[in-house]
Image (cartoon, rainbow, N blue to C red; front, side, top):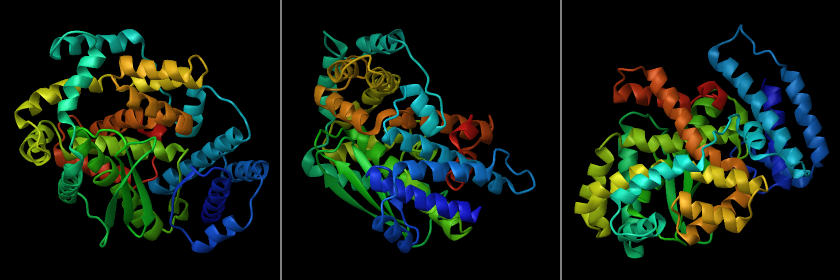
Amino acid sequence: MNDVAESYVKLALAVGRHDPDYIDAYYGPAEWKAQADSATIPLPDIEQRAADLIAQLGDAIPTDTSEMSRLRHAYLRRQLQAMVTRVKMLQGTKMSFDDEARALYDATPPRNTEDHFQSAIERLDVLLPGTGPVPARYATYRNQFVIPASKLDAVFTTAVAAGRERTMRHVTLPAGESFVVEYVTDKPWSGYNWYKGNYHSVIQVNTSLPIYIDRAVDLACHEGYPGHHVYNALLEKTLVRDRGWLEFSVYPLFSPQSLIAEGSANYGIDIAFPGDERTVYERETLFPLAGLPAANADEYYRVQTLVHELSYAGNEAARRYLNGEIDGATAANWLQRYALMPPAVAQQRVRFFDKYRSYVINYNLGQDLVRRHVERSAGPNATPEDRWRVFVALLASPRLPSGLQ
């Protein structure tokens, strides 16, 4: 397995020579990266070598080994299959949104009709003040809750500290883990964690568009604690350093690992701030820090709960757009109508579709799969500690999305 793992890492780095978005993180041997940078392997050769490794692993998962070893075998094989798919795409292979999502991320995205989204919009119509189309009224309402630029850093770093403190109650993180925050512009995403190895992350926040008060906790938990930073640090500690499984020293973005990463990061928001705890924390701490009306926090989160029911609208827009059924302008209009995105945000999201394609499923479907796995494994009478235990075990293991279902 270790020989296959080493070959897998080197092939992933070779793919990165052709696709600058493919490698999200690498902290393996420096000489492997130098070797990859010194010579470009043609895509057909990478495809064949990956197929050979899949054949070498074989279909049958060994039954005479530990559960972690069986998970490792299945994980490595599925990651290689996703690599083959991505390499085929780089050579011009066209796939439907659903086929691409299954091949890359090991999960089948659900379908939702316009009636599904319209139902939530009709309930928002009753809840939102004013008259007229719901998207415009929602935009007007939400503009009350934009974090002033001068207070963004204080609000965000405070939210990160809160997420870290809550995470540390349940997770033993490696000594010396750390991060820095950078504020950037003109990106197709709102936040990003660049994991550098040695338990260190660079967390970037995109300030090109307004950042609403609820995004502070969202981004702090998703990118930091207990999200991407914690996930990567635990993988490095428990799998790479403790077990010597070097395949986890590379993170190919277009792979099943991303559904686990994004899904756990999104679910991590809820596990760090369960139930009403988030509203209470934001009302008492972040709203005053941002200079926003704390008395409106409860109402704001009632609205946001309904808006969350529209989260899959983005998937439907991506499916239709990437399948060639609608153009970019129509996709942006769909997002404005059914995802309630302001025009600039909708256009940014279409840019995200162009760059990352079916990756969008990893956020909402990933969150739903992780949530169901944690709640099912923890049991119907689970305590918060029980859910944290299952959640942390997931972060520190090579489990596939299909294994969560």
